[in-house]
Length: 260
Image (tube, rainbow, N blue to C red; front, side, top):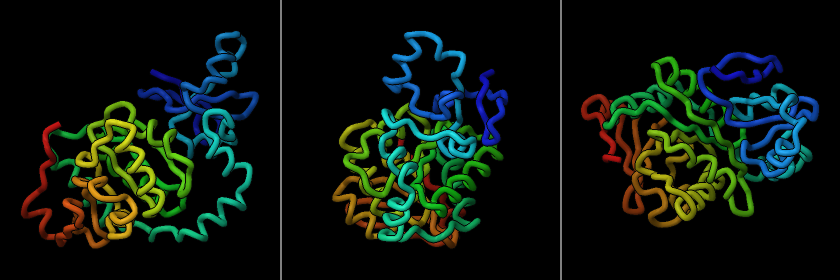
């Protein structure tokens, strides 16, 4: 059993380890492999102030700030929220998810072979994408599934390397994503170029299943990616195109994923 810190700042037992580490006195959080934190731990004295969080949302809610060393993009957004608001105004956030979307995503994963048990969740930092992933997490855990990690990404970044590396880590059975087209396109290009991420093991909300995402990501980047439509239907990317199916198609022929 592991001890994590919750959004209220209080410790609680957890069967899974934290995805992020933090310093209680300094009120900051960062990656577990943060070079600054590792040096401090090696010197001693840091361990007594060490805390752990399940995800970034929890760390922020508990009053901790991102580490400027290992999370520079997150730190920049935390330090200058006006800049973040301006960026989000430039790139409109996706629409709010529907219950039908969440249900279809859960059905897609439970109908996949081999069986999916652990998933890593990823989303843009807008409110709609955050809410979508939280809704899926609640539904997935309600079905007995496990969340390996939750990773966020900015709409604009120099390379997306840090969030992409964290997103692909751990070899989950599948990935579930939500976000606006520009941010996900940048993330997916970095994932294909720098990690072992597999789009055929990735499932997405309707906000990602549009032609704009396909155009921005580039040819072949997202082949195999599938997801849910707002009405409960499904879509899949392949050969530079997106194929949509109505809600009835899922029940008639549950899609099976390729062998891992």
